Length: 174
Image (cartoon, rainbow, N blue to C red; front, side, top):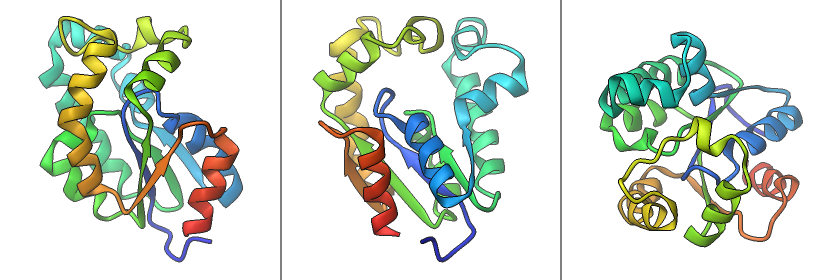
C-alpha cells in the first residue's frame, strides 16, 4: 500500500491504458483519479482537438502545464497524464512530487491497434505529425521513450495484460 498521500502519476503514450488503469487503481487504493486531458477539456469548455485546431499545440501544452502543476499538489489521487505531458521540464519537476511515476509501455503496433479500435481516437486525439498512424507513433515513441524512462520510478509493460493485471503489478510495487 502507498506510504505517502502524494499522487501517483501514470505516464506513457496515448493508448497505453492510463485512464483505464487510473480508474481501477484508484478504486483499489481508495484514491480519487483524474485524467489530465479530461481536466483540460472541462476547464476550457472544449475538446483537445478543438484546442489544437483553434490555438495550436503550444497553447494546449501551456494549458496542460497549468493542470499538471495543480494536480500534482493533490493528495491520494491517481493522475492519468496525456502522452506528451512529460515533454516539458516544468511538468517533469511537478511530477517529481509524486510518490510514484508509472510508465505504461506498449509497442508501436499494439498502440496503433488500440487507437484504431477506440471510437474516441479520431474526435479526441489529434494527429501530432502530418502522417499520423503507425509512422507517427514510431516517430514520437523514439523521441519520448527516453523521457518516459527518465521520469519513471516504475515501468510496466502492458503487452498482453488486462488492466487488472497491470493494477496488481503497480500495487505490488507500492
